[in-house]
Image (cartoon, rainbow, N blue to C red; front, side, top):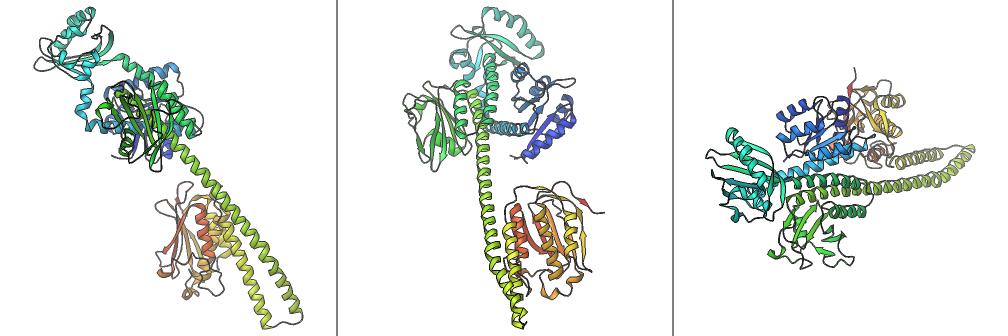
Length: 633
């Protein structure tokens, strides 16, 4: 199964459709968006291409969003469909859900709505794919879940599946051999005989609504489909309209619960919303949420008594329970009668259970004291609710990690700043004293020894400057701006380039980063090429006429700085970024170390390799380019 998610966005404002598509694709690189300007174009795309989810506006010419939804449902009954509109209302939302919309989302100002929309799309596509996978595996069983019967030419039942019999309150065997009239009140029988059956005889099929009669005398409205076979048998399928209506209402309520989950600030708030929604919307009596901690599932929220009697507070993962099975297998488990299983429930009065995983976070479980309390609709809605909770908990975990990372970076920056202050004050003070004493001594007469002392003090000053630079440039970059690379490289070249050396900027591009530190990178690399001939001593005389090139990497992942010198020997490439590594007698060995520190501070990676001309090439990857790359004319 492909991880990519293809979304069809239908909106009569092409500019908005394209912009929304760009935001969705930025939210998750699995998302690919194709656009259509109206329902007709949307239907054409659906007929030709594979689409995982439809996002549609409501107010459109020719067909509005509801009409487009109805057309989609005729051909693709299970395709996730989200109505995303700026002119909606409660009535539109209700109509959309009743017509089979997966969800309804109001357009708002700002970009946060696209994060919500992307989460909904991924959630519904994941659920649809899981359902489709289960459908393929258990096709025969799923077919049996539908109310299906076969009647002979005399109108008597030849075959009735369990779902069909359950709908009318009978056992399947009790209906076989009976006439279909026992399932309809007197007023409905005449309509079937006078209108529906003659129509089937003429065209071979009929679909519509009829009134069914249950064994206990209760009547209900049913969606009814009849198809005639070559042997004059009738294949009949039925669905309870009331149940479908209740499902639509539950979906509308789950939409509100999903919005609350997306706004939750803590894990406990997510658990509370999850339990409340299960009780109020799904009408589950006993609900619990367990979270994976260590080697166990630990109770995080529940709707049981305060003392949690009747539910395990901690369940080791190596124990065999429905919760641990569901978590390990990452699949929903429905147990119609717990007494038929070897697993002992926490309360012997529990008769049925529904357990669904919340990804690798934990499990959501509902239990009932009635057997067969959970049907296919309960399963679908529980999985949908658990999916919303999973997205909310994943978001909170990402936000927590970001806060911790930010705090750690601030502490790291503070430590580096303190170190720089110590170096600047505690080392410079005695160095200044030594320099002053040297000048006094030279007033009484100079010598080779005093000259050597002066050289040593100058080198100490250079080392202090490089150490301060290393400490300060190693601080993590938290504030980034657009930096055009070509002007920065050219400004640095004015300071370090030799008379016969050449700088060639191959591409015009910009990155997001710290301008001052990027300037330090180019100054160090350009100086390294000009003064040291790419760190190779044998190239020292060629360094004056070296050519240095700057450009963007072909795959768009970053940029490079290369020269045509003699390059860096392979055995030295692991050492060139180490503090103090130098091939020059008067070098400090900090230049390339500072380059790597600045790259790390940006979250980039720098590596050294060979240029096409055999010189040194420094490649920076993981770089966020501000926009496209243009070749220099």
